[in-house]
Image (cartoon, rainbow, N blue to C red; front, side, top):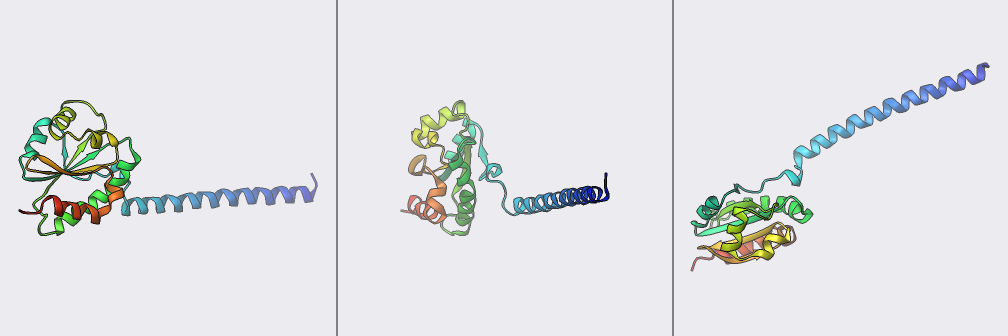
Length: 172
């Protein structure tokens, strides 16, 4: 091998080494940024919007309250997952609203769409369309009766959800 070929080979090896080190450094930076971003903005798929009702008895206990908001959640729907951060903000807005602080907000996981709790929802609320739509539905219940429903909380947005809560639970 002549000197020119050896020199080219050495430069090529140095270039490969630099490329490798640059790629490793970039991967580390991206990893740090992703971790920082996920700390600031949790993955919506992992957000639990409210205490979760898991049994028929728990559901009946919640309905004993005069003013209830239910979030019907599923794991298989992009719309339901995108509704979760909106519902978290909605709950915060309810807590800051003097006339809505008394409202009980609960989540029901409807992913499986069968079972004892599923049957209790169907028998009691008669909102099958909201239960099967998979949009992250919000249901307003007053004294055991459904008074309003939104199929997709993300589409409605926080302001509309608060306004509908005011209408649903206006004291008469």
